[in-house]
Image (cartoon, rainbow, N blue to C red):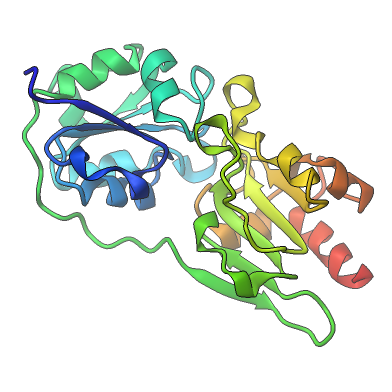
Length: 270
């Protein structure tokens, strides 16, 4: 099986063209949205990150979803490797969950990511496209004259230049892709919030927060146990702040505060 490669990427949506026909190790969390983006490449299997599993099993619900097209899929335990970094997952990750298609190839929890991915090389190339998913959308939650707009985007890369000055709630984790500055939060937003992805090894799930202090941007993350990763509106409605950067703390944020409460405070003071 030497002709079948293990392809690492920071996210499923940005996998390289050479992923086709191979096995992908993606830094994305293992929800349906990222499972969909992984499957579109026509691959033999995929390992995603479990993002601490979190509320409603949001970090792993892409696994049964991919069983629907017979694609082998597994997640790596976020406490063993860095979310947002496929290479780190391959070198250090331990499998936490597998779907039925992966189990049929011998994959199981407790294996290293490399062991699991090597077994996935024996799977068929699955070219069938998976069902459409509901994630990946934008919503305007509040728009008051003279106040910052409140927007929800299910994935941080969906932020646009026109979002400058807005309070943005994203469905994404707060990790840096491959652990390096990446310019993902390009607009000069008033504030931005994420899911902490269970925080994970070396604090990877919140590693972006201090970087945003360098731009004096208010930033924080809600506990993955309080709101499902990938669902920006639920993060806004039910999320409880678990970590905030220095700029957010200076603006009145603190761990344990409901995100909606802090957003209301920011609007009131703007």
